[in-house]
Length: 108
Image (cartoon, rainbow, N blue to C red; front, side, top):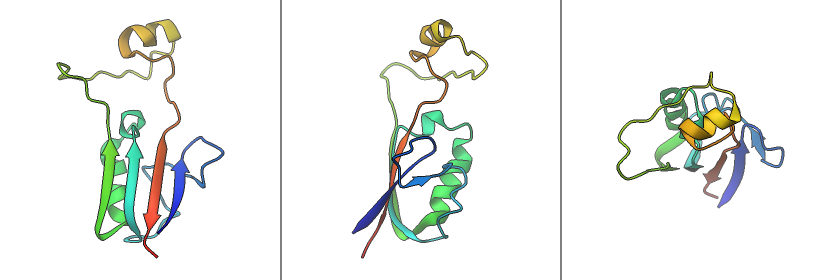
């Protein structure tokens, strides 16, 4: 099995890509994708899911890890809030977009 790492910002990733438009991967070419806390940082998660589906081979699969907090039923995000203190108050984080991690696997 071979794999490549992918990230929008990390310079040490194999591929610097936007998860919403992975044009560097051909359709139905990937066996497995792992996304660790990626979707919470994507402005159009539906577009990202369609793109991941496009590159997965038939029978391929996606492992998507997302944060879950018991008792929280609604989420709120406002990219217009840029003050770190206010972001901590509402979102528990100071940055608008942190780096995310993904891996793409091909069977050999």
